[in-house]
Length: 126
Figure: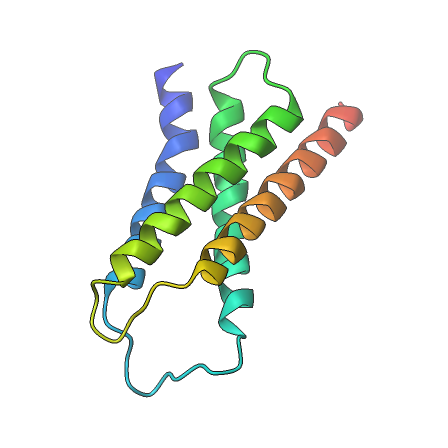
């Protein structure tokens, strides 16, 4: 049972570490972004994290409803995204942006929703 939890949580932990490392490094000078397209990048990155998180949360729960998994995922991804934004405020050439944190939470929601829809479809086939 412990191996199953490790298999579920390890990809999430590694992915969150990757997001943290990339996010706290100074931004290269050749990547200016004035268009707001970075919100899409945030949402996509955190959708992947939300998918992995929903899978991990569900792996450790005996009877967690899909709505609870989605709510927990949104709260954690938004909280993690807000934490990253605070850390970026102390990083040269980076700044904190509440809209990035919102995009992160939205991406987490999408990832959890995709996981739950996919999981339901698989359960119906079995």
